[in-house]
Every structure is written in C-alpha cells, then in structure tokens.
Image 1 (cartoon, each protein chain N blue to C red):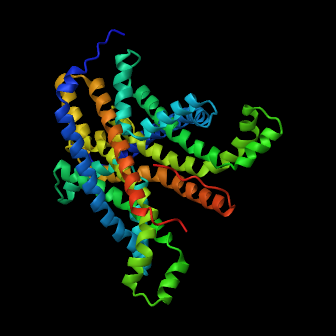
Image 2 (tube, rainbow over the protein chains, first blue to last red):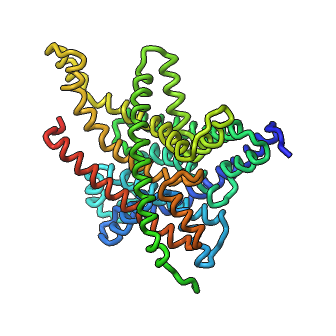
Image 3 (cartoon, rainbow over the protein chains, first blue to last red):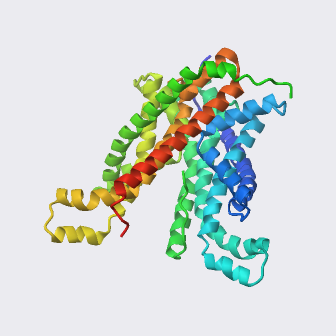
Length: 224
Length: 223
C-alpha cells in the first residue's frame, strides 16, 4: 500500500533529524577533545609527535569520509568490537572531526604572534603554562569562526552514516520514500531540514569572521 | 583476533580498481570543467545590476552549500524523474557534481575578482586599454593566481566527495570496490586498498597543482 506524503511523514523526518543532530553533537564533542590533542601535538616542539599528528591530518583530509566510515565499520566488526552502525558512525565522524578541528586549531595557534610566545617565556612560564595562559585564549578567538564553519561540514557529513545503515535524516528519507513514493517531495523536505540546521550556523560563522577581521586580528580560513 | 587478512584477492582485482580510479579522475575532471562554467555564470549573476538576479545567485549558492552532497545526488537521481527528467546513474552523478561545484566555484571566482587591486584597473583605464585589453593584461593573471590554489583543492575535494555517488551505482572507484566486496566479501581489505588509492591520488594531484602553480606564476611576484 502506498501512503500519502502528509504532515505525519514530515513529522517523521523532523524526528529523524534529531539523530542527525545527536550524531553531529557527539562527533563534535569527541572531535573537540581529539582535535585539541591533535593540535597541541602538531605544534609540539617534540618532532616525532608533530609528524605523527601531521600524518594523521593528511590521511583524514586526503581520503573520502565514506571510506573512513567503511573502514571503521568493517574494522570494528573484524576486531569483534562492535557491528553496530551507531557506534561506527560516531567513532568514524569523531576521527574525521579530530583531524579537521586539529588542523583548524593548529592554524589558530600559529596565527598568534610569535612575540606572545617570547613574552610568555620571558615570564618564566613552562610550556604548558605558556599554552594555557597566553596562547590558547588568543587562539580561541581566531579559531571560533572556522570551527563553527566546520560544524556545518560535519552536520552535512553525518548524512553518510545512512550508507552504513545508521538511521538519521537521510536514511529516514529513504524509508519514507519507499512508503510514499514521492521522491521529489521527500528529498526536497529533507534538503530543507538540513538547510534549516546548517544555514544559521553558516551565517554565524560568516558574522564572527567579519567581526574578527574588523578587529584587525589574523583570520584562519577553513581549509577543505 | 582470529581473522586472517587476505589481500591476495584484492591484488587480483587491481586492474579493475585502477580502471575505477581512472573513472573517478575522469568524472571529477569533467564535473570540474562544467562546474566552473556554471560558477562563472553564477558569479556574473551575483555581480549583476538587477537585484532579482543577484538574489537568485545567492539562493543557489546558499542552498547548495548548506545541504549534504549525498542528498543532492539522491534528489537528482530519485527526485527528478517525477518531473520527467530521467537520468542514468552516471549522468545523475555528473549533474549533481556540476551543480554542487558551481556553487563553490561561484565563491572562489568572486574572491578572485576582488584580488585585483582597484588602482591597477584605474591605471589600465588611464592608459587607454579597452575592456578586453584590461582583462587580458591586468585582471586575468592576478585573478587566476589568486584562485588557482582554491580551484586545486576544490578539484581534490570533489574527487573525494565523488565516492558518494557509488550509492546510485554510478561508475567510479568506490562503486567498483562495492562490486568486488559483493563478490568475495573481503570488505575491509578492499576498502583499505581503495582508501590508499584515494590518498595517493590526492597527494599526486596536490603535488601536480603545486608544480603547475610555481611554473605558471614564477615570474609573477606578489606586489
């Protein structure tokens, strides 16, 4: 039986969008922690650590997100860890976000003028204290616009979790489409829902960047 | 772990994977070329005298940049037939990629137009250059130099994103990998090799674009 595409179906899609939001939030929090580690490792004076972080960023930015999700999904089930799409999607997107946020934050840390490091050293602060009390507060301001910009990219990226079988907005669209057979309407609605989630963030990111530019600070473009 | 990795089957299928890689590069290059044309049209529209035309370009760019590529692909392949536009998977994939690239190219080109200092345009006009001469001698090279790196990374981005079109079975590297996985179930091995292939392609294109950039713009020092 073919169902009508009614308000009920729209509501179903809105409910599924929750999982898109939850997955994005999880990857953003996980990627925030991971990205912090990657960024600090990347600017570390200890060479092997910096090289390792750079290689991680290169591999993640140089391969498709879909491949990363496949590898985590099939890899986790090989290791008998889990064969659950939910965990695999969250883990894969966390790794993805760690690399991108790590690179953005590295750029932000390095955009802080050198003299600030020298001043911090002149105050006899140790390396962790230099980072914590002098560099990171200034880097955070620079990092904010591209970080919000990346959140948009992450939100859109969660749609790929549908391919490994996690039910979020894009997968719900396939389900609703199979029941109603109104693909144009279904996918237009889904696109509108993504737009409603992403556009405010895009606007915010743009506004933050302009404000930072007006303040005369360095800005860091979102690479990739 | 009691799993035994078997890369042997993957090596046997390497010719198929290499063909897939070539299809990915070809599809991306074609999409890039057509996407740039769309981008030029849309960038001109965004700088138009008419408000409605400017608004239209704005809506196009924002709509594409704030929705996932996967949804765009599914919209084109599954949605458009309802209004009579029936496309084969590879045509739908190309169309979705061109529409997607057009929006990003618009932003890149707009940034390029701003890269030419106003004073140089005025100087050119003062020398009595025609509009075409102005473009040829004053605008073209600095604008191209400004946007070249962005265009290069955009090409790599669409090459990586194109793996998504495997969901509609358009022919490219990931779709070839899916076929192999369905045949012998060595999913992890196949996807690992394919991931390495994407990485190699990405690094190779980055190196190539870097070399081209240096060769083209070596005599154009930053002013």
